[in-house]
Length: 308
Image (cartoon, rainbow, N blue to C red):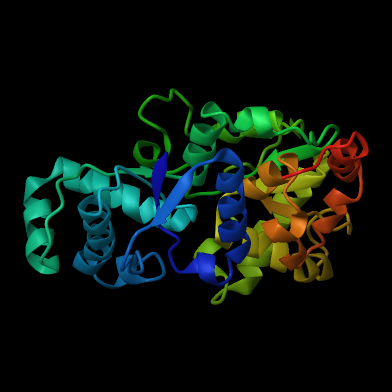
């Protein structure tokens, strides 16, 4: 299976762990990712608040390139990139006038044939395609809070797959993937609350307050880790825990590892944690490899086998 890959800007910088873990995961699943040649920024950083035509033209060009390169499905692991690409695709489907306008602005055609996948869509596709059978290093006993944030739960037209009846107000698409690893998805109250997102640099006090509330609720519910699919959410929850605790927020002072969904599945597939990028986190995520996960990972070697 060949799937188009749109890494976007963040996966080569602040979200490099997401890039590493997605690529490690497809290696286990036997899927080929083909990066869109000559891709550009999707505009998630500021284009939508600066110029409407630009905010549509940037993802339009990416979709046009993917279609031209024969890519029927494209995964955009970054939740913000997914939102811009999928949202643009839906707008173009609903408006021939907008499609003609973008073709004139960008100088390229787009016949609206590309299916855009989020990280959760992509993981579900891999699990159905046989990845579930390769998750042999079970993370039994690990309680995980599935954190969707804003961009993986809004708008419903973007975030709920065509064949899905998931409630966008109470998403559960990560739960099956978490269970497939042997971990336990917990019930908690802040799964779709905003972490502060784009205010990360301009209003850090708001980010500390919002992210602190998310961490506190996850801890109160018994989570040993939080799993997300958004580099911005990951950055706020992972990088700012020191500031959150210094402000007396975030519940107990204990650090809480923040993982990408692809990292969690990679651990369950026996991928070395450094290959997944767990050693790059601000908040210690390597602790998850020193308990039950470490014992599970070493079990095949003791039996004469080996991990991937």
